[in-house]
Image (cartoon, rainbow, N blue to C red; front, side, top):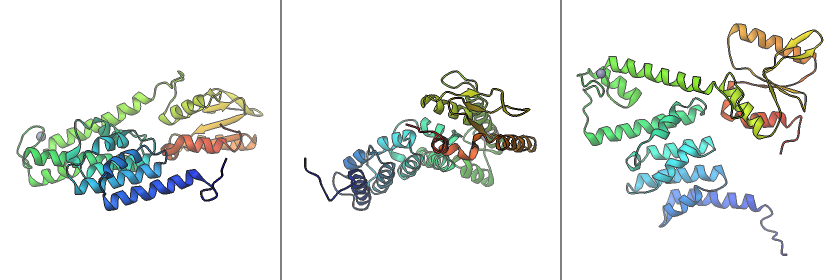
Length: 301
Ligand SMILES: [Zn+2]
């Protein structure tokens, strides 16, 4: 066997090559760029997929006949890395006329409260771009409510176009707002059910923690009573019996809840227990944060 001295880390080398190529394709748009970009969309490196999406957006701006948007759409909806989703959404917003068929997946993304804010914002901007394009194409008038067909004022038109990309009267504007609030609430409600292994949990954060633990084959006891300190009973969110580790997901922010939070922390500390604290701030990368915090105590595969 021959060893290569130049590239001592082939993975790093490939990452570098693919990154540079994605940047170059976006800059120079050579023949066959679209085909190459599609391949880069499948790169194992999120950074490369992100740059490829960005390059696709640049090319789409130049050629209105590009066919990349189908692949971009699946990148935007399904890529596991949120930054790749964000860049794909931004690229698509540059060529809304190329999006074929319904954009229900994008609408779901915009409403999905488990998505990072920047992804939801990029999804909302894309929806607005598509609406704007459709409105132009259909030659819709801005002085008529798109829902009830009533004549509307310039102020109503501006306000609703800013918010929803379509003209609505004051009444319909309020109704749509209410519908959206209810939709978000229902999404949250629906999530407040059961994990895949059947545990009923109280929040999306807890659901994801439970499912991640199950996927790692780490046994856990959810919301049970444990005596952790002499005379003090505590009710941890999760207890990992194999490792004697507690996990608390501090999901609320009310004065009463915070007081309990303080008291609980105090008990854990006094009993010198291994405690992992998570909160809604960790939601964008809950699993990796949990994995990182756990790896301080146990070896994960
Ligand atoms: Zn109306």
